[in-house]
Image 1 (cartoon, rainbow over the protein chains, first blue to last red):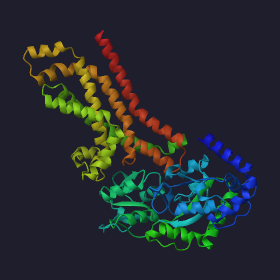
Image 2 (tube, chains in turn orange, brown; image 1 turned 135 degrees about the vertical axis):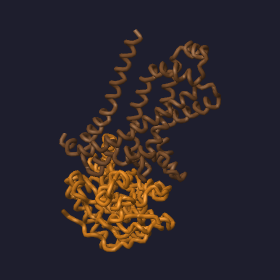
Image 3 (spheres, chains in turn green, red; image 1 turned 180 degrees about the horizontal axis):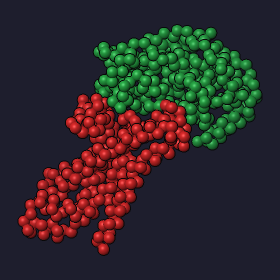
Image 4 (cartoon, chains in turn blue, brown; image 1 turned 90 degrees about the vertical axis):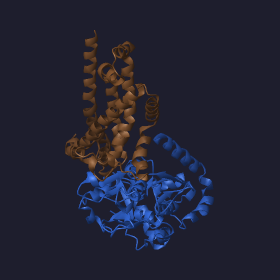
Length: 295
Length: 236
């Protein structure tokens, strides 16, 4: 897999070199996809490599309404996807040259470390444990964990409602939401269900096997928007989940470049447009974008 | 190594859940499988047909599909498998009695699936008993059930024990699927939790999980070897 990819990159890279003479025509043609003129990238940097290869592999989720959702159209859509497009555009890579790779929660670090993706934009919460293996640009969005319940539910008003031990809650395996909610429940054996996707949690909520689904509010908003009034949010966010863009550990120049791109997108309104066109449709206001953290 | 020691309680918890799941499912599968085997050799054609149909269905479906049916099909039909909330037993195995039905769904899937193999192992054992034994039983006036209980099954059991053990060992390994159908905290799901949510390296966790399963299966395998050797000695 890696070798194939390496060859592919090498071949495309070689092609890029061979066609360097004709590059001028492309510069004027495709630069418009991001609307920004891009300065020459320092030689040897990841940005220069990607720009030269005219190809970028972006990891995102394929099952997250509003953020990364691959529907019948065959291309993923959502806020994360738009952020990915903005970054690719600023690197001088046209939208149709982006390779979208599905990265469910549990493979994200591995895929970055193995070089199977160049960046991951996948509702990816920045935390220290993950920073041990990869680096984060951003955050580009500030989410928070919340609970989704059936619309007729009155007894759950927040995570503290789970402490009595009677209410059951579902979340995805390998997510930080599961670890967080364990602090609120009395007994995981009788209260916690973990599935590999939130779709199964939603079905369990609908079928009344569980009483709540917990994860980041924006993910829940997507399900609520599509539930035709069957579900609602229970109370306020009880954590802060800054979403970052995962990239290879130690690639400082690439991280700084993405942070610059994000900061620019805040200013020129690109970020807000992306939000309003995707996750914003579910009723959550864009608000002010979080300041990028140049650690 | 340190990871295994630090997380010993997590592994032990996972082991305990898997152990409970296996014990309950094994008992249920043996009981149901024996019943099916008796039906398959019974002189009543409808019973034979039902049992043969059952075996044909459950032996030939992938276990994952059976799990899908119990974990997602039953709720869609409005069932939480509450029939398995057996009074008394749910005190011993607390997860049987909780409101959360996924442990029961897993027990159901595993035992329904394994029962088909248990049935076939038993039937092979019954077929291994020389026909003269059953004929002799009938000749002295034993009814079908007397013949079965007193003559056939005691002999069939000896021929069937090893294939039965293999079916149970296969079931213990198959139980790893339960963790991916909503059963929280069994051995396999513990691995998932330790690696992807808590970010531990994969290989040491995998080794810990392997040890957990081997502790369950290897003694059973050794026991079967002994039984087999004993039987070989007896028939010499």
